[in-house]
Length: 357
Image 1 (cartoon, one colour):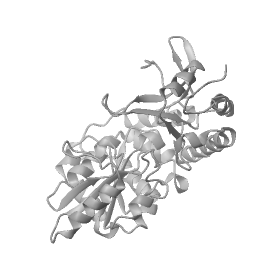
Image 2 (cartoon, helix red, strand yellow):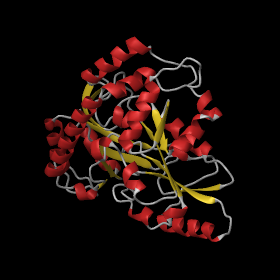
Image 3 (cartoon, one colour):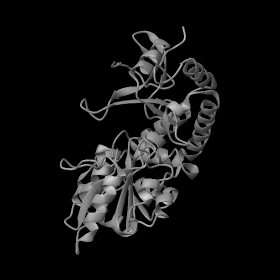
Image 4 (tube, one colour):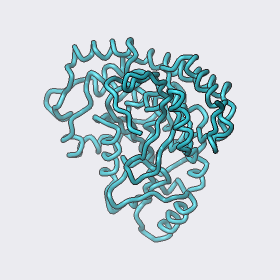
């Protein structure tokens, strides 16, 4: 069922005059309607304007972009960073940068469409992926394998331990990782997965992400070596694209204390949910991440009867499988978590979703 709304869906959402608890979306830190965060953003809009459509290569340039990129690079542990207007564009930027006869692309299971071109598709298992990459490497002077993957793939294959990835000949592979659902949320101070993946010894490591999910701003970023980032900065793709809003970049710089505070709240909610909910083994989830996936229409319907709306739709298009997730955020109160847990505990099993009456 599609629900149409007229205001931001935070911990609650009103639909046709009825109030529902909301456990969906990707606003993990609950920033978008959090007044202290809004106040910072509004002040920056007054200073920088609502939008800036000029090229980053223009003869008149904001200093805030380079400042934010340096902070982001320091946070994740990369040599350099570039920001763009969206996470999707950041992914496509990397795809185009590595679109070369020197490289052959491979896609891990559940990789996001931001890293695709029309002719590519996912491998449905790491075993098949390993076979294909090994075959590619047997040929002399063969193109270097480039492996695209999502850090948080919601199946638990990758984050937090990346065990399947470790079985690949990584020293001969370029890794391109989308950390949109990790950065700002997981790792030390929300630094995501870059430092962890660096230790695995890939031939090269690139990362891209949305800054909307973990940091509450409409922007994207790419990370890599200083040499590669400088090369990317000199492309037509980068020079021809409008940048992220400078007000958003300034807000990112000034909201670090807010991010820390909200991450702490999110972790409290996550720990409470784990403590209070009996049937988490029936969900697919990752340690330290606030998403709990399942595949059962009856559970979604049952939660809706209890005035709870979760994420439940075909993604990324109508032909894809239904994505069903319960998602916690820093905006949820203790009572919100306790109520959700009590309702889930009343279910005889997630498999049949029989609610007690």
